[in-house]
Length: 190
Image 1 (cartoon, rainbow, N blue to C red):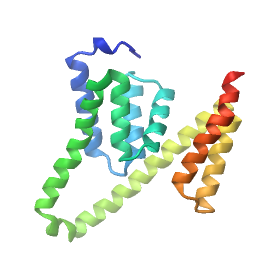
Image 2: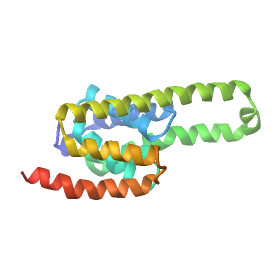
Image 3: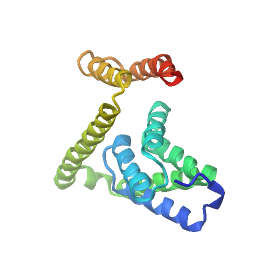
């Protein structure tokens, strides 16, 4: 991974723009799906980031107001190349939905009433769900391998609170952040 942002040239920005553009254009299912694809591209394929910082930036993107996919792209772009990287990733992330929505708006009635479109969207929802589950399983496996008890307890208790007791996600994020500050700060000091 290259921490020297000043050496980023035109090739880097073109690769950042087009890879992010196509991920945004072909992703259905929201922020969690795009995070896994950005990780695959930026970490696994290009080696621009590592797993840990990508997950940290994704957690930060999730806790910020706004669209998670856009937040994550901005943060990842900024991490890789400062403000020019953030602006490049931002443009590449918002252009595909903007183009798609502009085209759909022109023929909204025909598009909305199409049974073919409805079935295609249902199929894409299934695929998006599978990608989200895959990312979650991957994260749990990594935490189990690292044998980090406190993060695993936070993970399990958050799941139980939301799934079984329907606790608001925003409240859980704040509680998880506070738990991380309290418990993990002590663990890092050791």
